[in-house]
Image 1 (tube, helix red, strand yellow):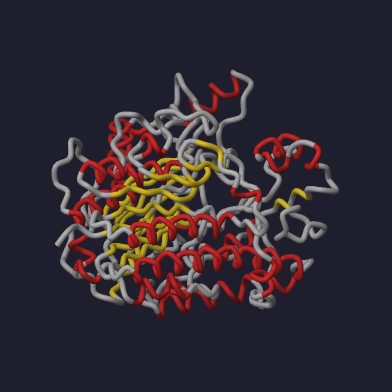
Image 2 (image 1 turned 90 degrees about the vertical axis):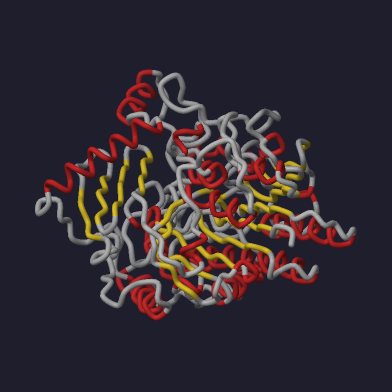
Length: 527
């Protein structure tokens, strides 16, 4: 039997508990179906931020090693290139050499130049076909850098264009075209959605379908999500709910409740649109008769995002997206920012759901995207592959991170002849229910750092001191044990530094000082 098709689906800024099979109240029937007939991981970790996570996912290496330590703004000579390093083979390049079609539809965000074709573009990193955006987030109705192959795409000029739908429609067309031609080669499809990253843009009918869903407020909904996470077998019944973000009021005391609930309704509509697109792709594969021998992986690139818009001065923030610039970006035409005066959803708005709802998205954890506490790096991770011996409904408790994905894909594909050694090992034994030893896991992003070895996780929020948590007993990181176990703190800190030196982590203090001396802002608000 030939190798399996492989579909790698990446959500953008989706929190740990947003989808139904991870405790969420947002309807996600297609993602939930993958989980019920596949395997979920309870302790899978990403890399806290968009571009670094994508770099690690596609190369099997830590992002600092492959040029994407922060985002795609170059910070050389004392920093990172902001481009996917030319010597780092991607999963698409490896599978293409082994005889797979390689397709990508969605967001790239691994090139410092998103306008001019260069060596870090997807078409030059192993993908036969590419449709999507080269830059980070953008309008869902008029996305900047929309590209097909290496040429600008004018799809957004069509009536009714919505980027999430377009990503799924393009991939579905490729699958149907292959089926019509009775093509025997397996395919690898990378499907990185921008949903549900801000701006809060959704079709009116999808928003309307979510009216009232969040009227109970963030306090009640966080408690409900934790209960369902326990019922699903993702979290232990002893798991404590982290306290509400201290910057936010109790829901009962919150002003502008209709506007607050409306923000989350649009976010939910974005998630539902992504789920619908995933269903369309899976239906096309099922019609081809190949769904059981297709490995489908679903995950998110970081935890829920607590950024309130605009980030920085409004006039500066407008420069990040074409749709906010020029004559069309006057206050009357483009309403930017998070305030009750801006009810998000439409193409003339540019807003985010902010701190309180990101706190819900990351239930039961604390912290958010950018941080390496559990709220920033804990991700939903689902794999379905019946022909590969994955038993439906299993929940795996073994801890893994992004560097394990590429080895898992190559293992499933039977590709053993590769000219590099990824940082991680295959997860297939654990996914099949076999015993697997846990490796030590490491993180660093803009000075935030962590190392996890077994039950112990050492973590710090830059520039604060190290904290130590017993993750087996305290997954929500509520009880710092650093003062009780100073020897473990010292041992893990030394181990983290050894890893940081090995993979080329550049000290964040140095990068900040260099940016300030050059009259620049550190590259932290680029998405």
